[in-house]
Length: 359
Ligand code: IPM
Ligand code: MG
Image 1 (cartoon, rainbow, N blue to C red):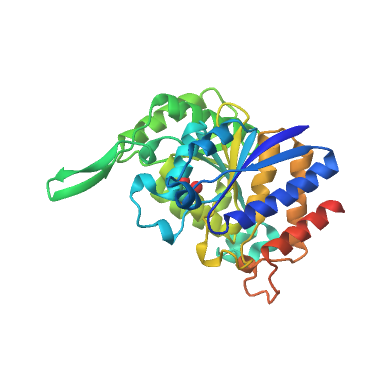
Image 2 (image 1 turned 30 degrees about the vertical axis):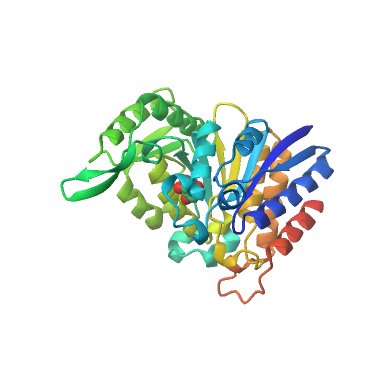
C-alpha cells in the first residue's frame, strides 16, 4: 500500500527523533512492500522564524491532505517571551483542533528490562504496570474562553474550563471501547468534589458505562489519582480524563516507566487520520548532541501503523524490536541509570532497532 505522511519535525530534538522514526518506517516499507511518501512542514518555533507564525496555512493544508501526521516537538527558550497566540505551543493546539483529534492515547507500561530506571519502590515495580491513558484533547481549559480583565484585586488573567455532554460522551466511548480490548477496567479521573464540569463528566461517563456492562468503571479524584499512580500503578487499566488532568498525569505516568523518552502517543478523531508524537517536549538543552532517545517517536510511528493504517504485523515488528533491544541491554543517555553501560546516540539506538527488525 501507499501512504502519504506529513512530517512536522518542529524544534529542538524534533528533527532528530522524527528523522529516526522515518528510517524505521522505511525499513517497514522495504520488508512489507509499502510505500511511505514523506513531506515535511513547518510548525512551532521554526515556523515563527521562517514565516512569522507558529502554524502556517501550508502546514494545515498539508496535514489535512495527508493520510497521517508524525510530529516531533515544538517550543524552546528562544520563543518563550512571545504572547499566547504566537507561541510555538499554539501550533500544536491548533493542529489538534483543526484535524479534529479529540482523543489522545498515551500508553505507559513498565519494561521489565528497565526496572532499575523506575523510581518506584522495588515491591511496587515488581508488580509492573500497563495502562492506557485516554486524554480528551480538543476541549476543556486549553480551549476555553480566556483573557485579561480588571478583577477584585486589580488586573487579572482568566482561563475557563467548559465541557459539553457531547465531548465527554465521545471520549468516554473511546475509553470503554479500549477497555473491552484490554483489562475491562476504566478509571475516570475528575475533580467532582469541586468542579461542575467534573460532575457532568462523571454523570456522562456513567451513562456511557451502562452500554458496557462487562467493563468495570470507577471514579477517582485527580489529586488521589496523582498519588495512586505512584503508590500502585498496577491498579489501572484504562484511565480517561480531561485535557489538563491528562496532560499532567501522563507526564507522571511517563516518569514511573523510567523515562519520558519512551512514551508514544496517538491523537485521533472520527476518521483514520491521526497525529503521532512522543509525549516529551523539544528538549532544547540536548538538541544536536545525539543524546535524545528516539524510542518514543519510533513507538509513535508504530501506533500510526496500528491505528491509522491497520497494519498490525508491521506495528508489532517495531514494538518487538524495541523490546528486544532494551532486553539486550542497549540504552540511551536518559535510561542508563547506574548500569555503567555506555549510552548509544539517537542514531545508534535506531540502528540497533533496525538491525533487530531484520532478524
Ligand atoms: C503535551 C504537551 C502539550 C500539551 C504542550 C506542548 C502544549 O505538554 O502534548 O502533553 O499540553 O498538550
Ligand atoms: Mg504535556
